[in-house]
Image 1 (cartoon, protein in one colour):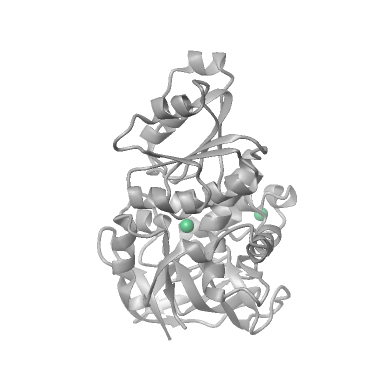
Image 2 (tube, protein in one colour):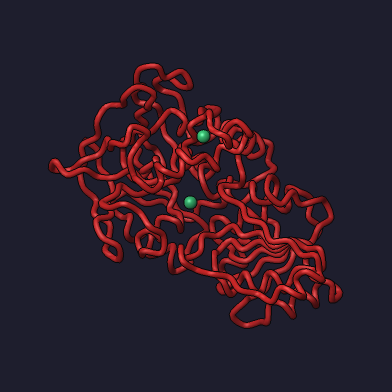
Length: 367
Ligand code: ZN
Ligand code: ZN
């Protein structure tokens, strides 16, 4: 038995209850979750903006300790501190072999079926099957995941903050370093100063961007952005973003624009705000049916690029430990990301605060 947050219906509060968790099968790992990040993608699912099988044990950003390993598990053993991966790759398909594990179709299937690789669930309540969310379900004291969904980490970083590397930090920093490959001296525009956007900002600082312009509707979040390395801020509710960016860049525009929100209006602004041969990077998750339309002629003349980045285009087994090393070396921030800590019973309040823009990131702690 484990306490967990369950989504039964979209637009309904999460229900916190005891659930039954089966022991790990072959190739699976049971993790005692210590910390789970409160991320917008969960909120999108709760509001029906992103599809999910229901009912589901939610949460996709988390860390904890290995509780038990199934037969044939070689990557980790009992007691290891781990970060959970929300895209479990199969390890042998076209994309896995090309070192693009996040694009693995098997991992994507888990996300949409809500079941593990053998197409069954380890969660139930009162005999009713509950689905896994993204193969992680971190809002549960105990979760069972494929062994590809755990990355063993160093022991000297607090387990509670390590959780954030599993989604927000990897997604933001990776979009800059792995996907866009921002060069030193660049001008980088970042829309959204929440969990992912702040990590785009610190990723840009890490990459040596000379100017980092953060855009948000809330001044308290722009203050967070400055703390993470933004050199300039624009309140998109009060200012014309495209004009403000032009003013800050001698009329040229930004080298890169990152949308960390997933909003069509922002993508339009970003495409306008980047200079000729500049790059717009789509990072945030839009509504799953949202469409972007733009006039192609000036786009072609200006040699602009639009690229997308999922999960920071990462290889979790290489990049998660690297991010923790960068944290220990003082080159990226984790502590300042955690504005609040909640108990699992307060999970609905945590999502309310997230939606209200009150926090950089919050976590649910089980220990
Ligand atoms: Zn997330
Ligand atoms: Zn694969």
